[in-house]
Each structure stands twice: as C-alpha cells, then as structure tokens.
Length: 183
Image (cartoon, rainbow, N blue to C red):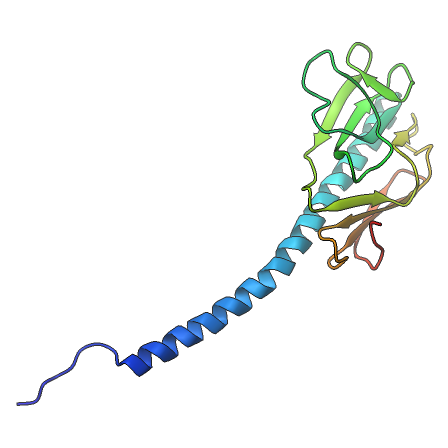
C-alpha cells in the first residue's frame, strides 16, 4: 500500500514565497511614486476649483474676492482677522474670501469667508511664480495681480512635480508634469 502525501514540499513553498516577495516589492516601489503624483494632482485640482469658484463669485456678486495663503490655525473663531501671508509654501493653508472693505486682509466683521483648502503636508511644497501673496479677482472675474504658475512639489528631490497655470483673465489650467521646482 502506497502512502499518499498531502501538502507542499519545502522547495515548492520557497519558490512561492520568493515569487510573492518579488511581486510585492515591485508593487510597493511603484506605488510610492503613484501616491506622490496623485497627492500633487489632487491638491492642484482642488486649487483649480477654488480659483474657478473665486472668479465666479467675484463676477456674480460684483465684489472683490481674494485667494491667498494664511497662517495655519488663523481661522478658529467667528471673530478672527488675518492677513494674507507672503509665501505660499510656508503657511500651508489657502483661503478664499470676499474682501468687502477692499483692504487685502480678512476681518469677519466686514468680509465673508468662502472656502478653506486643507493644509499641505509638511513634506510638500507649493510655489507661485507670479511673485504675489494673493490672487485678487476684480468684479469682472479677472485677476489684478500677476499671472503665473503654481508648482506643487510632493517631495524634496523635485520628482513628480505638477503645475497649474493662472492666466490674466482669471482662468486656471492644470498642466500636469513639469520640470519647474518649488525652490
């Protein structure tokens, strides 16, 4: 009578584990780049929606609307006031508000806060080549500040950088991959 063996041999098990390990390492290696690219693209598309919203609000309400970086934690209470910060990458939060008193800063007594974009991760950077601390939309929906490109850098080695272009007319265009850097 023959003994029938059930199960795997050690060699079969080792080959299977090796194949699974190779496939897993390839998947993990490619997913980090994919996650960085997705994070950059998602943030710039959210910024594009906010720019489009600010432009349409300015044109439809006949008021000045400002999109600018603000200090993280500046918006906590109903009576907050804050100024637009000079750099887009160090402040980590972007706000859109109606500037009813036309002074370039937010005061909850006079101005209306329209939108807040969630903060940028600490490892990422954002720059604006228009050399302005804000985008100011006049009542026709055009920007009265310099047009330029927003560059989002999801890491410090300048790989997977993405760009968003803002024109003088106030429209924004997602341009995708770019060789421009945040520094």
